[in-house]
Length: 414
Image (cartoon, rainbow, N blue to C red):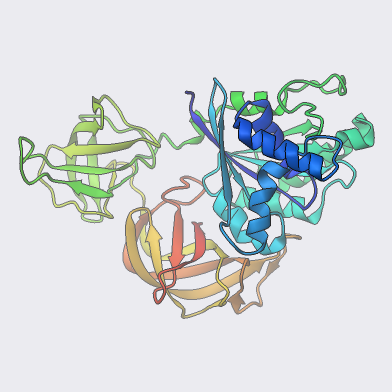
């Protein structure tokens, strides 16, 4: 199996997102025979002239819109080159928080637009969220090209308009592909209906996309999740620190510093489930042994002495608010940052972003459900963090309602 690509799909209502996902699953042979038979049967019963692949994902959507089951539907599929996780997020404005959930870990955002309608308010909103969450790659699929006669001019107009908008958002890598999800044009293989299009099919683009260099391999960051200390057996004097590498490359012999204590040591070994390795890099899960017996506990951060994260208690961040009750100044919050949990209080709200116009409203005194704004949070104990643009792991926090323990917001540190 090749490496894993995480894809967040977004689009507005009826632009063919379900059909596109269904087509990818169908054409990569990622469906079970009984799933396909059920879809064919339902299509026949409804009197459709074709097999409606949207039914593969719409079953989940119907439940989701009644407020049952889940916020984000995850679909798994694989080709010989790579395996994929598709996070399917709903398009409506009231689901901003779902899009944030789906896109926060994504390597690529897949935005759909209907060739007949062009760029909608929704498209711009989703592009803004993708840029805010620092999704490194974006693909704009201009769908329903069959309904505009595979007209190159229609495609070029949408492509150019979107590129103009994307430059304002610091989105670096944008690919635009003309597709018809219904007919399978340019989804898995190049379509003869678009001889003017010189790019690759959608699946080829997803398979060949280079994502290894998206990870931060410069700044060593290792949040300690667990202290491994067997009490008995032959490993009774073993002491290691387990966690997932959040940045940089860790090798035996490297000088390291443990924060917040500031104690220094050297890496003695990097262990994995399959035995010791010569180096560890994101997103590997490893256990690190140090040469010195230091006091290290869960929530500590291991870094390099000459390259340390920022340490502070007053933290500026962009927040997507996800709770029904609004967020206002002086609110008390639980804050989860990597493996560390602290308490904090909201000092101020600087502004709320109008996601449609990108205008900043500095008059607001609270953030409501699905609002995105800039705030300052004061934590009771210092955090070791990086700006989100440098490291999506050490630069993000989850805000928690202390009374109920539920997640109420997602923050990106500035």
